[in-house]
Image (cartoon, rainbow, N blue to C red):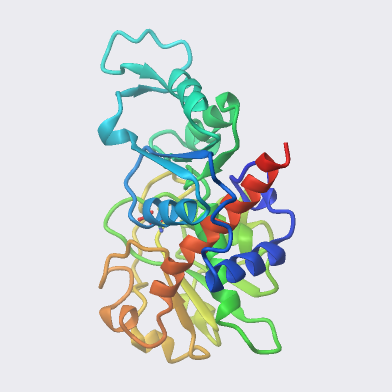
Length: 319
Ligand code: CP
């Protein structure tokens, strides 16, 4: 693997899921693989799971880990090409990436959607600068439009929890939130589910359809009750409007996932990438109930990251 920013960087999804599950069985089986190499984890936004699971994964592979909480600890970055930097910004992103090239063998970056310019976000204005200026493999720790390490962990979790001899029905359902949230997790989950052997539908209110670039021909249902019927897995996630970019069109029905809504399902397992706003996106009863596989999903972030870092190291070590 040369880089990891979307599902298209994965040659064989079933193989990498299998590899991640083997790593889960024996996380310390490749402690020499990253010896003498350094991964830089650059966070332009907050994180709990991605930061810690990436650190654990890298340490399990023997990598040196540099974590830069850039938004809090680094110089104020300028992103605009040709900017006259006589204001608040102190260092251009191009220069920062060139310096990271001197220190790191792999650069992993978290750069959320700014939610101000649809064009900037759709075009991945920050991740694209890393892809352009990095001279080492780039890994996305969530960008404006995708969260691939999360999606791989989601695929691992579904695989672990499905033993029946038929395709599971997987429903990605929109959930309420108090503020506009990017579409990255929803987009990414939709992309990855199209590579899995599942029956997949998306449920969201009118006005919240995701970008067709990611959902393609997936069925989108505007009634949550209808979509949840006979579901085997329910993935709960909020996102703001894509069409009316970053807006929150009014939703009259209640879309919070409750225990009552699970009654219509096939004892569906409930997933969420976290962090979750309890009793807004889903109820305490669901979060703490026996159907929730949400903490298992969070644990699998380690093995998702470790499988990807391991494949990137295979490529580096082959040179
Ligand atoms: N799911 C996820 O990416 O969590 P963090 O934002 O805490 O990293």
